[in-house]
Length: 423
Image (cartoon, rainbow, N blue to C red; front, side, top):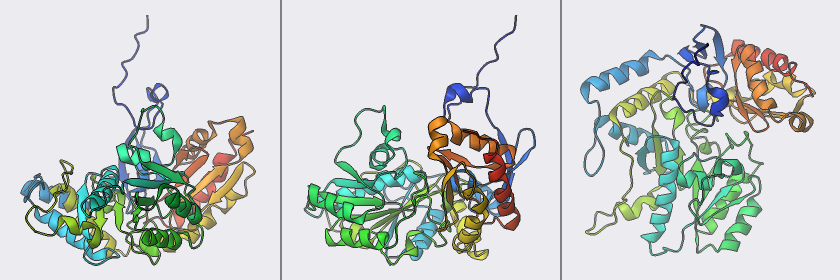
């Protein structure tokens, strides 16, 4: 009698675990723009893992910085007056790059941490400036802001909020492409009650949705006029993905807060940072007796090893001039996807703003086979390319070091993978 093999207890995020058990793809190593599985097959990492391996994999400079820091100070918290040199250096460097001079930097363990921090700071800012009724937060339909409590609620992907019961309240959503809708929602709720508006420069996980011309400038001005904090969620967009340091600085706007993570360490160690404009942070930095304290923070905020990795990563971006690559490669990526765009099973290809794209399947195919995005992912894998499935297709965000050979591979793999699908 056959004995049933034990199932590994690892529970994967965003996964059908009944299907995953016994069907895992085990990544064993990475180098440059490529990763290898446990059968030693090589794949082009066309998603930079989860939007973050901006300089690829296997950088010795990061490994050395981490090893050196582990031998010097392996960990210590930032609570109260404690600090460490890597965290202080990182905060200075990030602040110096920010669109608004004198910005403060609050560190966390990742993007979800700093999104929740941004909501709390927005509400606390108004509480401590005599307007405690300003607590409402507005997000965008299809926006994604992580899976923490506030982030899940502010995010506009409905299925991600299902099944968890009541989420944090005083939150609403507007269409992702209408500045007029934002103004109408502020007026409906009352500007005296709205604390913040969250905006990804390019919506990432929600489908690589590009902002209409003038949209970013328009919503920033609406927020300014109504005294609503403009929070740019640049967890995906920052560190070269859109060709600038923060992504949002591609537009002539100055957000009140900017969330970053992912590319700040190239994904090597979890780390997030919230960049806070001076006027928002001011109530907490007066130095006067009885000044408010922000009673919030993650255990590993400003972890010295993570910050050492981030400082080494910033060195790489600067030394190798990687930040502009997101802009330089946006047209070559769109050109590489032209063959897929012409395929009869494709509904739309969204590309041309930064080094990321979405390939959306046709409505007829999705109606006939809702599982087609997952099948396309597997078909691309068979062609040696890793892509990420979303509700209506797949998304791409290759490492910034990718070059013509990788784009040629992508250009050939996608049409070949699409040919395996059928209505």
